[in-house]
Image 1 (spheres, rainbow, N blue to C red):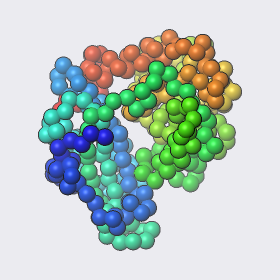
Image 2 (cartoon, one colour; image 1 turned 30 degrees about the vertical axis):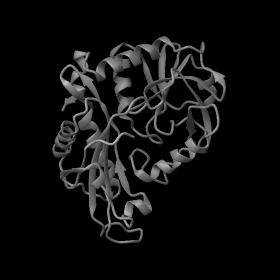
Image 3 (cartoon, rainbow, N blue to C red; image 1 turned 45 degrees about the vertical axis):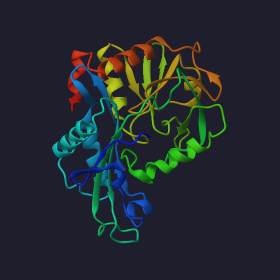
Image 4 (cartoon, helix red, strand yellow; image 1 turned 135 degrees about the horizontal axis):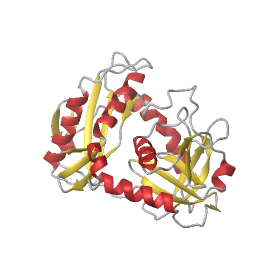
Length: 299
């Protein structure tokens, strides 16, 4: 990670090296924070932040699951993000907003700890820098929806993802794939999952997965192009038999999947529907598509 000049903390800009927290910060011990990942891209109109408001709305929702009230409005958070990008003078990269319970009390009840808020940004390239990802089904399942609020983007949830990623260390695989408690496909550690079969797109339904903002974007783009999208349970055998498969996510963007557990998907090459959606997405995020230009906030 390349440091930038400033991080926004609790209402103002502070130098990157001074953006620190106490070791007794509640979220450091218990994982009770909420975060977002947002990309911004170089466009002809300046840095364009993709679906900024939707990300900030989800952040506020995720924080509310933890009983946390963020002391800034959506509008203030969006403006702070733009201010930060301008101050750091970078034209494209990644944004990390984080709301968390700070230094106050110890014990599982966080209510007497202060709510803290920060936003950082930095230059960042491809998350999965491969043409096609080779993925392996994790031995861990995706966290059970009755043990948490599955669609909230809570810091502690990502220990599940960390374990899945660590399991791949030293292997040839680029990413993991979670099944849910019923043995159906859920998602990747940081991505939503799609297959294509007979020119229709299928993706796991909401309930056990994160309601990804890139996921919703791709569903909209596919339907706008006249492609049928079905949100339903998908078995591993169905995925093996798919014509195409791909991941979506803010970090991963649209990443084609080449193999699952060494089973080659379709022809083994990037499929035509995946390729079309990837191209449309990359055009939209840099402001080249008028119909999706409203997804961008310019800093």
